[in-house]
Image (cartoon, rainbow, N blue to C red):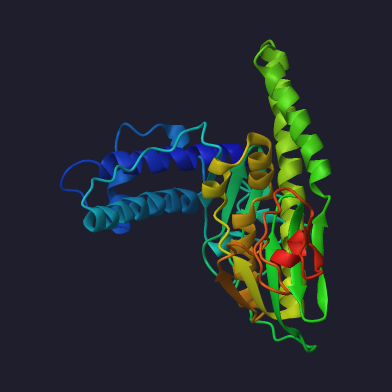
Length: 332
């Protein structure tokens, strides 16, 4: 049922875009709804979905055209709004919050779609959607997020040092440690299995190729879920323990151009930038200030005397002043 609704929503979206690409048309939902749903060229099966899905598809098309016009006014370049394709990896359809219940969508027997929810939810805001990503379906429900006030006294400040060997090293007055030390070994094994599957896909027959692609998707999702769990647990620990978090401006995509392929892959797989964005969102939720800073020379500079060393790939920073510190903790 959800797959059929995706296809019908995509059809109405593309029909609306095709209409709005014509001259002297206005991206107004009222006008579009009145004109697009009329015509002898509309097949009978196009109406085999709830009215709310059709209206949200038209609304998405109008918003896309409006955004394209705004970008064109800012940049001076023509912004083309493309059609949605069946092969798009991420696609979905929207509906109003009244249609959503705890275990089904759309109350009509003709269009009813049931599901099993792992937890209860509230539908306070509009914008509910069902999204498909690589054969997995997600129910998106906007929520009002309250700001939590910490019950216990938090430590004032902490500094982070993201890396490849260890996901994050942190240092604060009286508290320091590492998060995700050695975690990448398991992820690296999954990456190797994924590489082997990808090499087999190019040599396989049609049926084998389909099965291998499904297996590769499962491994990709396994890697993504492991990294996502690491991000969420780390961010949850930081915002509940500290008032201020200093994190480097970790532009991974620019840094990997100077690294060899294996280190670059490890860094990209850890998704440090995605972690930083999630940490900022979590910080706003828990009244924790996230401050970006420059991490240049932090691992090379001795924290005791300030002397700069060439440590290369060494795991520890040794200085003439007698300091012997883990390089990641020294960087933090």
